[in-house]
Image (cartoon, rainbow, N blue to C red; front, side, top):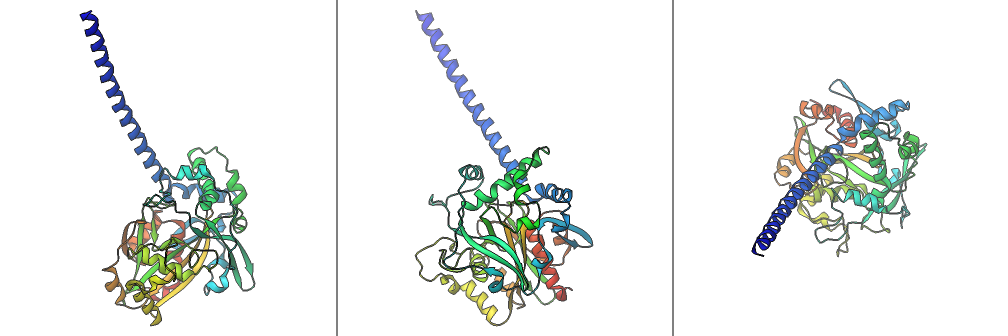
Length: 393
């Protein structure tokens, strides 16, 4: 009986130890898999991962000319950004460019929970209080050509509608890159060329902005460049101009217009000065309350003196997921502004790190040639160089 008891105790001890070892091994294996999956996700979300495949897709279809091409330090450079030359015309103003009404039309896209679940593996779909961020976003509903220039029709969609509409195109692309024999029926229907892209058939094509903020110091032009954090919805870890953002209506409701300059000011306040976020409807009655905050008040005073020129540079569609990027330039000619403001700027969660580059410098050229930038930022920087060519040393 004593021997049986000892045998049972020994067996129990061995089983307990094996359980500890197996749980520890399972935990290590699970953690290793999680880390591997996170690394793979970060690699594929960089523009370098998809750029070559996307360019080849349009080349095979005879549509390579519809991708944006430029020259960088004497080297031809193409990016997967669908556009027409008329969409890069100088002198575009938002009053005539944007077709919108109040109250806004709203998207009828059905939220795809599977798409949201995939993105929740690497993106936070809730804020620090555990509340989902699902506010209204401006979306492009179509582009038409008129005798006076292009016109973009806007509607509003909830944020979750945007990844539901554009996310499957992105996912399909990644799958096709991983397995070259995979077909791309969704891309073939929605994004085979610039004409189809302009129809915005998915119903919630996010209307985002990329703005080059340029400081003229007198002897050269400096441009703010960020490396996007991995918490953003697209191109985490890539370089981009500052700021980059999705547009919203004035008071985040259906009843007020979408103002490009207001959205720029809001994002400068959030991204460059660590301001309280105004992308969620709060208790403030006046949606322009942050105009009176010191950094924005200084920026508006610079504009009133004629030392800030805000220009629309053009627009196009990101070929990865069919969202529209409208690109602009904020050119600050006050030679003292950079020295005074760079010392007090504080970035938020969207930016991993930030630096000032010479607009025509070799460092910026090398990063563009290496595929470090998102397609919309390449377009913005190239157009900025064209507009400011008279300021090139």
